[in-house]
Length: 180
Image (cartoon, rainbow, N blue to C red; front, top):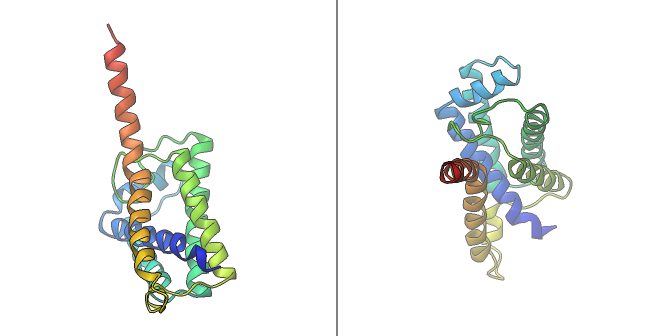
């Protein structure tokens, strides 16, 4: 289903951003995994981050069944981790997705990555073309698609990395205003 090409490109793009962040700054992910009971060295987090970058780039540029399946598997792992952390109320200052502190997992986070799992799973079953093939389409739909993918990527990043900090800051600020 070609209509999922945009959401799939967003999911793959997030994988690239998150992987690059983890490869550069693995400590937040190491701490998040440690809080969940998994002792993982920083070197392994960097390696997985680099793998996420490679998987995401291949999904965006080449498309197809294998990249779709690899993106789906990555997102399934993220979804499981965040779901378990939320269910257990694991005290995480960060989920480690973007290698930054103070971006705790939220229900919104879980919904976005679960949607990424579903879209990528569909792309594994019904392979999607890479963005270059979409841009080469003579109908001219590629450029608007590319703009919408960029917008979707930006909005998803904001929802995952910025919204949790804004919500916490807003609650804290409101508490201070209400205090006598």
